[in-house]
Image 1 (spheres, rainbow, N blue to C red):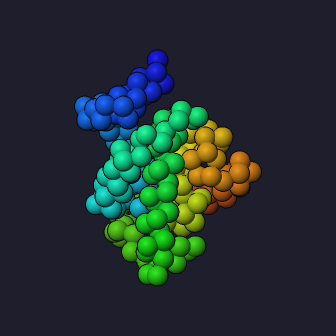
Image 2: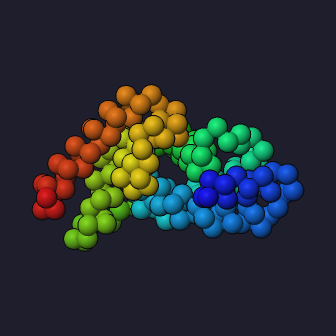
Length: 177
């Protein structure tokens, strides 16, 4: 029933430019898209909000291109992932994207697990962070992560394995394991 609801909302937006239908889509997916970006930006709320807004703008302007070959949420996350990649590319000249982010917005250790998770996620490469977030936070299966990111399943599995290993090591070293 959930898929039918997404498809009917998309059809209403595409065929009739139904803004209420698109508002329903935004309300349904806003929290999960924002949560995805919060993890990717290491807790930067303003940047996460900007990226989520850009994702929904792109979804709205390109909704006529949705063909239903995958679930709507997969299509939406694919847009979010591309928005993230665009943002990373735009910032590439000021950050080392394969290492630690220069300014991730994380304050000094305050003892909270939330801050430690962001600090740990900062150590992951962007592709590892995206795959780990999509699986552990958003509950996406490997096949769907591969669709969203455009990576082969084997590559997704490698990113997940390395990312989870780094997370486990960091959390054990900091008294959470």
